[in-house]
Image (cartoon, rainbow, N blue to C red):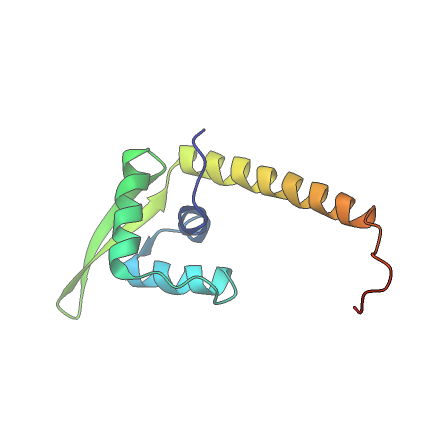
Length: 112
C-alpha cells in the first residue's frame, strides 16, 4: 500500500465510524488530532478527491440543508484496511522509538 500523509490518515480515521460531510470532517479531524491539524476546505476536497481515486473513500449521499448542498463521504473496505495497516505501522514505529529511548544513556554534565 502507498503510504498515507498524516492529513489523509486523519480524514480516513474521521470517517471510520460513520459518513460525514466536509465541515464535519474538518471539525472531526481537528478533534482527533488534539486541535493540531486544521484543514482548509481546498485541502480537504483535494485529499478527498485523491482518496476517492485510490478507492479508500466514496461519496455516500447528498443532502440539502438550509439551501446548501452537503455531500457525505464514507470509508470503503479498502479505506478501513488502509487505516488498520497505517495504525499498525505507526504503533510499531512508536514501540521501536520507546525501546530506543529506554536504552538511552544520558549525557553527563548536562542540565535537564
